[in-house]
Image (cartoon, rainbow, N blue to C red; front, side, top):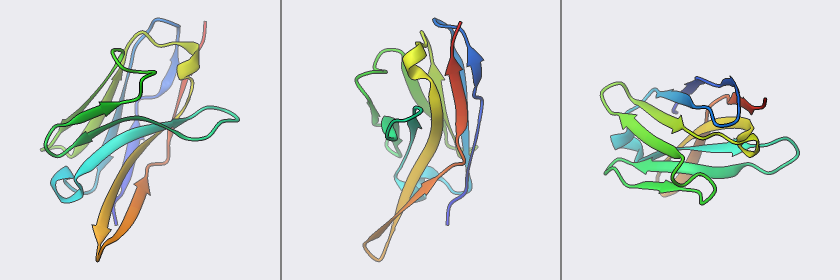
Length: 119
């Protein structure tokens, strides 16, 4: 089992910035990858960014160049720095990780944190 606790969401004006945090109960070295997904009202949950234990980062095209994912290994915390926010970035942001046990993948999600971009 892995527990994920997000924080840092809020209301911000277009063009503004926010930083999300996600504290995990286990080290990324035992998990392999951590990341962020988001879900806008009335839409499916979508991929935002991931980071691997080796430091490889992947981003959705829609956030490339504006968002940065990073990790504090000692604190077992992953961050998402979001700059130049747009109204289309509004949604609930979920921290994500997964593990494999006996070749079965188990996905874990945080409770979500609301991000609203509006003037």
